[in-house]
Length: 325
Image (cartoon, rainbow, N blue to C red; front, side, top):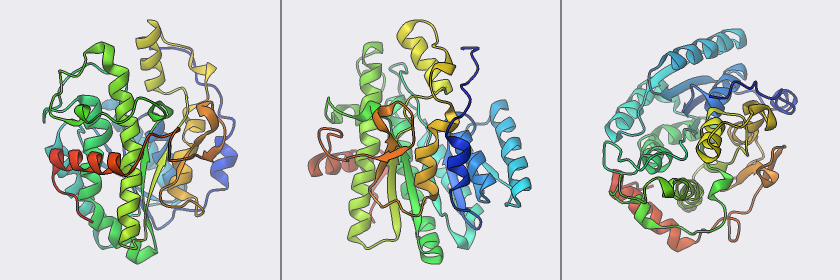
């Protein structure tokens, strides 16, 4: 791993200061123990939210939970909760969803942040037989969203709105278009190492397509739940270190790119900014850092259309079960 220190955050302090309070809201975040998810969890706690951190048990996770706990105490926010969740195992996701339901009670869940993701991984199968990148980045988040929709609906009824925030990437932009084969039960036989970026691209395209399809369905039922997508741009996370090592043979210095805090701005905007609209995609312009800008969810930026959205939804349902709104 690169020993280079992160670049000092340039935009995060002033940007977060102007975001509204999250007091009284409950925010659940996957992959909340490191990288962008950790920054997001810590920031939401500082803003007064009850934070539910979903992830796999580890020493890193224990440390992250402790830091979020300290931030919560300092902000006068409720204590955070850690929920064990393995996105490579649908049974674990269902169990985690039940724990979240038990935690939020009658107030519901105000924000579900589907943040966790992996990149440039081996061609391996998840416990359920799907590609590990597709399972982690797409299928398990589709399942988690389905399982928690009733809790999001409760929060929307009680507070006026709720949000589902899906983390994508600029790697999902442009060609090639959606390829359904990556979303079938063929984990371990989807192109080997040479196709590791293809699998990642498909997963990140799917994150945006899922957001758009979910927005369509929510609007059709006149729901107060917003479906939003975001991209972080290149920033100095562990994923950056992993990806540059895979591509170059050695890690690039993390201080050459924006900090994880600066990379979290679009996700934080989707969680807290009152001006965002369901169906929006936010990210730094050109993926090179900077303040969040609204991006087109249409070709040529995102190769999405009604047929692709319906096909993705159907494939996700084949994997984890029917998701009716």
